[in-house]
Length: 193
Image (cartoon, rainbow, N blue to C red):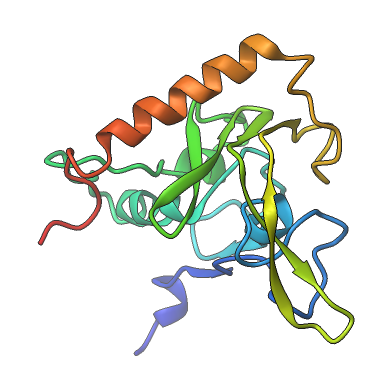
């Protein structure tokens, strides 16, 4: 185990926002929901040969980016015989001049159903159930709400629904979700059995 610190990268993150107790930092939603409070989590990375300045990357990222990023860290390409939905984050991490990975869609699921899509600053929600929390911290299933369109760059709390204002964006994102749904189960993704 000699020299481990020179050959180790440490990543600290979480799979979702807080469950019943805990703070979302004012963001809407909790664990079990696709609102920002249920999906936005810290991501801290430390290791040798990474940038030494402390910096924040505002580009949307997701846990699906960990596999291609880890492959990139060790100099391997992601598999080409299946779809890898994530992106290699190493250009953002290593190069101060890189501020974007380009156009990308991040789909938010509940079990196997995509319920929301993030594309740039915008996040579109299909109608879906919400969670209600009582004073005793008991989770109760809420009613179906939505659809919603939010500009996450100016409204991370997902308060101002832009469905009636950004009608073209709504139609584009609805189509993106429908097109994506058609590929599920028909194209090899992630781990192959």
